[in-house]
Amino acid sequence: MSTSALTNDPRLKLVDRTIKKFDARGDALLEVLNTAQEAFGYLSPELIRYVGHELHVPLARVYGVATFYHLFTFKPKGEHTCIICLGTACYVKGAGDIVAALERDFEVKSGGTTQDGKLSLTTARCLGSCGLAPMIVVDGTVLARNEPAATVERVRAATTTKAVS
Ligand code: FES
Image (cartoon, rainbow, N blue to C red; front, side, top):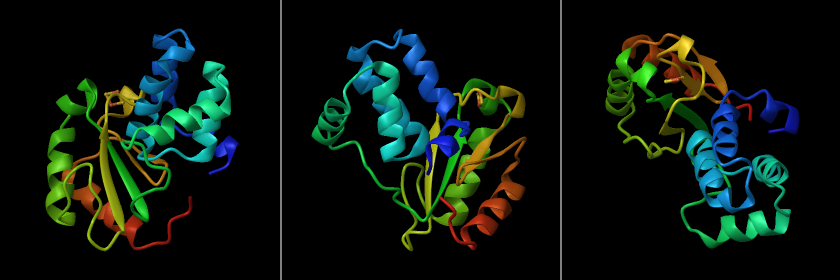
């Protein structure tokens, strides 16, 4: 993912919100990396650079912290990623049912990757686009106002094409 692709990525709003919450203090590094991993599923080099830049923390220190904790990963686990927002607005509009349908259909638990390595399913807190609720992000593309059956179809279509990022 290029830097411009990253700055246009709606998932970055979640990272930005955490940075703002901590007034871009360097000591919030771990919390911000946690949010970044939750939103994107892994920490790309561009994302790590972005976090370091925004928190005014040297890149070596960001890598030092990220590699120290085993909860962080640096590569996408599945060939495709699907992130379902479980923030309040999305949840009240049925995001929980979407998660259940995807888990059932793809035989994978949220936070996991299908056995064939095709799809990683993750959930996130509010992604900052509540007007699109319930919203999901498939391979970096935002899909708005979803419902379970159609979402399964859309994710299935995405996983049968080649990943772009
Ligand atoms: S609750 Fe889902 S985008 Fe805000």
